[in-house]
Amino acid sequence: MQKKIAITLLLIVLLPVAGLAWLGLRMAHNEKQMAAAQVQGLVHAQLQGVDEAIQAYFLDLQDSLLAQLTLRPLDNDSLKKMALESAHVQQVLVMAADGSRVLPAPGAPLSESEKQFMQRTSALWDNPSLLTQGGPLPMAPTTSSLGSSAKKFRLSPVGKGMDKAEAGPAQSGWYAWHWNAQLHHLFWWRDPQNRLIALELAPVTLLSDVITRLPNTGGETSPVQTRTRLVNGSGRTVYEWGPYQPADKERSLAMLPLSHPLASWKLEYFAPALQGGAAVNTFGILAAVLSIGLALAGLALYLYREHQRELRTAQQRVNFVNQVSHELKTPLTNIRMYAELLEAEVADSFADAPVQDGAKAHQYIGVITTESLRLSRLIANVLSLGQSQKSQLRLARQSACVDDVITRCVAAFQPALDAKGIAVQVDAHAAARVMLDPEALEQILNNLVSNVEKYAAAGGAIHISSRQDQDVSTIEVRDFGPGIAPQDHNRIFEPFYRVSSRLTDGVSGTGIGLGIARELAQLHGGNLVVQDVDKGACFQVTLHTPQAKETP
Image (cartoon, rainbow, N blue to C red):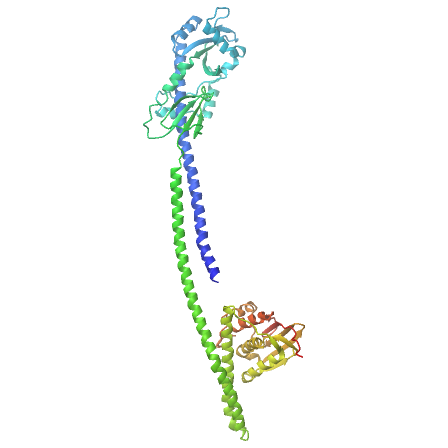
């Protein structure tokens, strides 16, 4: 019992604590994921701002180149002069509407730089359509400052498609290609004669201009420990800024490919792993769960101690009742013995006197004997209950006859049954001597017959039958009173349970007799059950009673 209580209280503590711990860690994990997603969103927005700043530079450059082309003659000499005067343009390519070469002029001697240019653009001369595959930049407000709000504006892919659909075939655009591990750019424009004029930009100048649009590297005093890298198509870092120094082979927290015409380049973002907040949050959750666990453990310990105290008190009461009952047993036996002696002496004294002279004395002595027997049965039940609760209820088997025990029981109850007008019918068919505890069987029968006397006197009769079948003895005790409801057939054997109906109204009882009777029957290897009958109640006792060995 104590072990069950301890396990129950332990589960009451552990299950809520385990549930709270799991829920807390789950919430911490979800919060960590949400924080990581928010950080990723902020980092992505920051990288996208850098990409838009680079796009703004190309838009400015595009506008500048278009302005130069539209404001000057478009003959070969003027275009060559433009390449010589511009810091951005290093070579010029012109194709006629039919795809033939206009500049560098066919048949004219080529300079060394022009020869290299022709070699770099050989794929375009073989397939001129490659040039126009590089579309124009999306139209967006230009800006020269990374921090301005204009750089946060960028057309969606749907917007780009609408612009192209409304404008028809592109009239200008950017073409990017790699040559000797270096990225080159051509800005092309279709003039009014439908010629393609392509301006090759100087890679060094272009890169220098892009870097000037990015934050400078002198931000080591910034409180934000981050580092952003501009990485080219070969995986080499072109430029980086921020005070944080990532370790070798450290993975970036975020990466964003740049937009056309730097689509082969990307931005990488590095920062220390954000573990501190999650650790503090997890520590707080575990501390809270531990506090709740300690509170529940304290409450469980208090309840356990209170339960133990109540259990000790109850045990002391049971021990007291058992002790008192045991102490009452001896004087009660003496009272019964002297009552029987007195009855015999009275019978001798009034042997020659009229019957009415000794009737009163016999009546008084009969009451004393009957009540002492009733009290003896009650004490026996109380003592048996105490032994049962301590698992100390034992049998003392000996050679005995079942019918003899029935006869003694009926004889003891005969005066009380006669007083209530209950006729007794006994069908005894268990005369063989068997191994059983006669006192235990008598206690079983006393409880059953006593219940008939108290609760079924209105039936006016009690029928007791016995039979034997090999090693099993069966006794049935039936009355013809109000009976027992089917739902109470099992509950009546529970300790201290009494049926709340007219069956027990005004009748005293302890509610322990039937439970003790069933336990004694089970100790005999049998059982005590209620049989279904049309009227009254019928109790069936089965006992395992091996045949007794005959003494020589």
